[in-house]
Image (cartoon, rainbow, N blue to C red; front, side, top):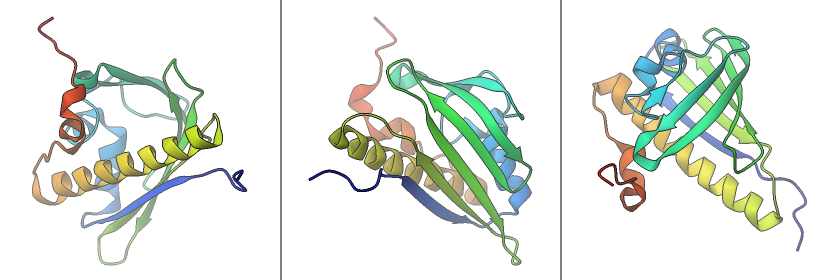
Length: 160
């Protein structure tokens, strides 16, 4: 059976913080490294190209900022050398009660139907961890290490 529609990964979370704080958590690597990647070559800025590293996994992503609308929306294209880039969009819904709904959509997966489905499932799970980690950090100041601890057996041995 062939896919009728290409899969899209979506994750969302209500963060009990003002939209300015939540938006800044994704553009400022000093904050983002508390709940997602371990290193970045710079802030997200319109048209910028940055590199994100997950040092524990020996993984990197080259990121190109396609759109950045303060407190509203971020769109990036990202990937590594092994696969074509995909697009990620964050939408920030500023709620009247001072909270923010963040919706992340990852699309543009390439490969066979099986590969595309696997990538979408993996991305949805990954962004769910990212949003849960963001929530814990911004609401409670707790670093849950969700991304780091998700696949501990895949950590790169830094002592070799």
